[in-house]
Image (cartoon, rainbow, N blue to C red; front, side, top):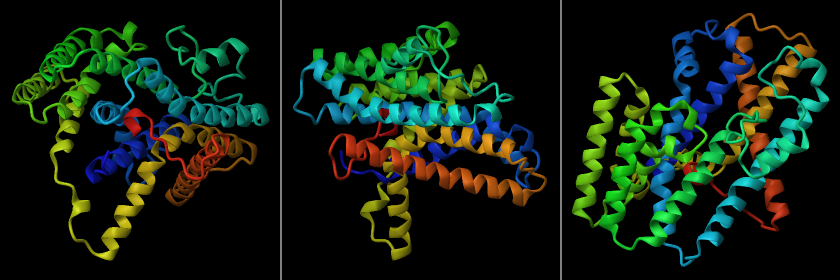
Length: 347
């Protein structure tokens, strides 16, 4: 698909929100009120998980675009390709998590959010992306999302490959969006399954299918209105976040405009971060563990804003190093000189 700058920008923002959401709820919860921007950090800590809704809507939009432009029609091959784009990088990230946990285990005893060293059964569950379905603990933050993303992709394949009519697909998407929003997303026991999140993912899919279809445009607008009403009347920001995200697809693409050299640099920086956003998403948690362990080991105290900002800078740039390492190792394993796979919603 052609690069679309508003999506890249939204993806970068959502990834950063998730990064710092996990940073504050895990390793720096006691320092939220220390910073000069304590209200902002509190908001990130409390509501940062809503960025997942952005990933879901974007993922649904992009998956329709990719599936409608590929010549591959076999469901199994498409699923296998997506698994290969998701799992190997996740495996590398989990290797970092396990390695850091092993080497620093004596300094992580007071960190209940760090998983114990995994058993073979737990590793196999992660390999098949079924750890949540089996009720097993995740080794890293964000693993649950990768598993849900794969489930959602399978659902999208089945819809798009076995039904030829855009209008019929649009009608089914509308039904599933409303069913998910009104039923399954209210049942916490279903949060390990794709249908719990389909109201967001399906909304992104339907947004793409508004092209050259008046009926799908109507269904999309109708679905948006329902989600907005539910979000307001039920005080559920998840639906409002999905509602707002879907509008990004209809913004003009600034990358097609004539811009200054400084703006070009900003565009390139955002596109760079967007390209590695999946590796950042799965690679930031090992950095959180690493910093937390060393903070305990060397008795590093955070007493003022400058200390916390140094800690944050180390976290940010350390995460970029891990993300680039994941990209590099993945490229070596798959004998590719440059490989920037972007998983589904972080695509």
